[in-house]
Length: 378
Image 1 (cartoon, rainbow, N blue to C red):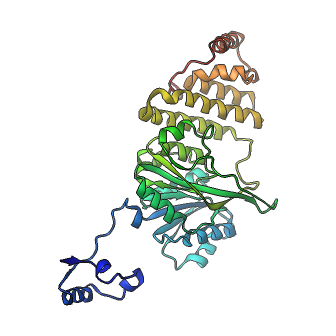
Image 2 (cartoon, rainbow, N blue to C red):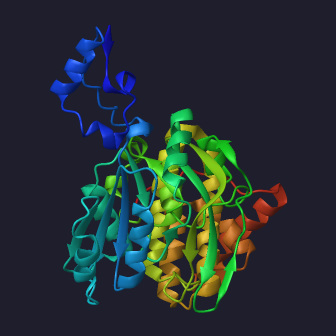
Image 3 (cartoon, helix red, strand yellow):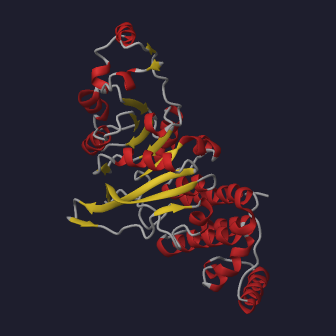
């Protein structure tokens, strides 16, 4: 018979270090057994998998230290916390070295020139090596030390899942409030159902950090090439290639403050967001077929309406948005007209009335035509 140290002595991880391979071999011989070293788990095996936790940071030294502490407190010990310092000037480098200099599970990367949150996330992802990936902002933290362990168990039970996510509490230290609104669904959701019902029917987790993503799915989804890595894009891309499992438990605390993205979206952020929606639609269409076209139109409409409601923009910027919509999602134009949003553009009279008639026709039919997204500039 062949035995390993696991079934020979039932050793704990700490005790295993007390026995050399030669010693274990001789103990096995005393029992009439042959000893061999246990094989390491496969890279994608949740039980022994490495989780890469990517932490972009900029000038929030004290919050960052608390965030990393909460990562290292997880009961699943095989983690690497990759801190990407996006050109901080508050002594972040020294603080990380002082607190975690002797901790091999913490890696520190510095951008001499700021890349922004998306660029910092992307750099951290490219430097990571875990079979599972987590993105957490420097001002968020974990409350449940067994979250990674629980998420990996769900990944093991549902190997087709792209992500396992949980609930969070939302708080503000400045305004002294804390609130909790649980996700309106728990358990298994197919990628198609979650994507098509994202936000409209099924809640989105408050941020990216309450989710553990499977790296093999992220590679399929093209995460290494992503330029915009906001929370919604991370979830939607992953759902194009895998399913989801939502946990009922609270796993962390999401902090709201003046530094969060406000209702007033920068124009460049909107344009990048629309391009990413078009990219996601092309990915989803290849996976799920024409069902995603109506969803895509609603996504574009929602982003544009949100932008106009909360942002003071110039007529040139509004015209750029309109032109993008006409090139990439023509069927959204009747919805914009119906909502009175296109009146904010300085349109040629002939074009305005052509779009107006198209909108009236769509209203009579009860819907607008679906068309596939094209590429910007085509």
